[in-house]
Length: 270
Length: 291
Image (tube, rainbow over all chains, first blue to last red; front, side):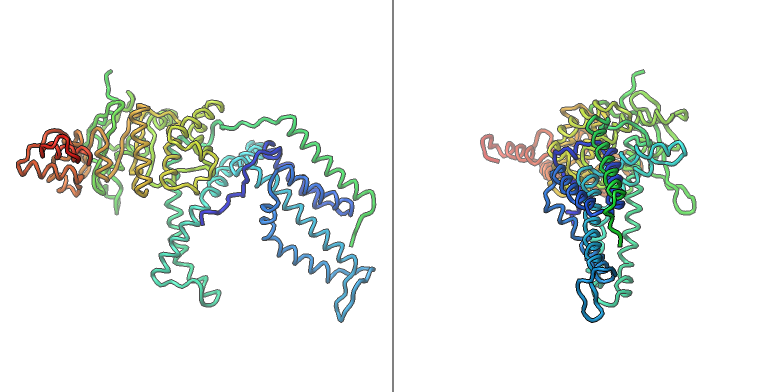
């Protein structure tokens, strides 16, 4: 239970790790847009190559990346299944009984895989793997800071995010303890219908909520003792360097290129 | 004005109990603590020891009486928020549950939390964080996630978070109660180091006798009043009184006490097992004997 990775941060020294977190949030957003807008076969090739390039730049082992892809494998297979069997087109490749597979379906399936793959690589490489959760919350706070003028409590939201992340493992550990304690008293969590099992969780949830409240009260006192007042300096002050701006420009050109390829023709539409 | 570092004058405090009836916890208590002292506060459950700690840090305010800390009257009605921050910077507090004190998801970010709130310049924060982590021996873990550390390590990180605010005094509110023996030893060594090497005034609230024995002075609370106040050796001599308050006496002190009652002449103080062995060994006349 202690091995929960928070935000999956992977400590390493790489050009991606060194980038300003604020820029990384923007890069991730633009990259997601590029993956979403791309409709072109060359564009997909470019996307795939760029995703691999980004992984190499972040110096994250492919094994680690692959592990983070496994949970979405099911979604990918699901999408592929629908694209392959339910797309109708002109190029009939295979027909048997009521099943017809068209070339267009295969194309679309391939593109869906590339799209999901690049989306995950884009967000995880720019954000979770190379940026610590606290840097990320600071970055989001900074990027949203114009909203402070509209009296949106941006800092409070960022603090809440940090604390939520911090307490996930604590609460998981506690839920584990409570479940063990209830099992020792004869609770049964693993047999019966789904409804019965859900009901069996009630004696776990109630103590868990109570203890979460207690954590919150004690934490609030401890934070007050450390003079928390929602304002202050930061240990790491990030300044946008030339490389940050350069990365942002490269990414904008990349997005423009993808869109240009769409306009250029060779567009694949189902 | 020649005030001791902490001067508590006749303070009383009661909790709101059922039906709005006040339950008195601290009753007309007075106490003085000098700078650089290592004071252990002992008492069984409900003796008011944790409440006293929270009063010194302005988490609670006494209903009557005055508290002076570092020459300032912290019970004055004109205390501003900045005064409160200044007080909490001077008197840091480490609590019982290490999990409920760590704010950040990375050790060094957590240590930086206090100085960040005090608006210390960034380079200065960096320096303080490194020094604080070095002081508690956690430099190696600067980039770790707190939930992967042991209880003793987490508590040392919490201590580093307080040290980084450069306090003059740290209050430990049963900070070892939730730790295993190894964690307790780590934290006790750190507390001793803070007091001896860094000159920080330590107030340690505990119910472990052997920990209290390490302090320079013990204050025993009973029902919101000070029952005993003195050097560990003096306090532990009052075995009957301590037992009547639901407290124990460390084994070595009890042995010496019983030997003295039996008429064995033992000279000197005795609070640790080593000293105890030495005393008995000398009484047996075996100067060179292996004890």
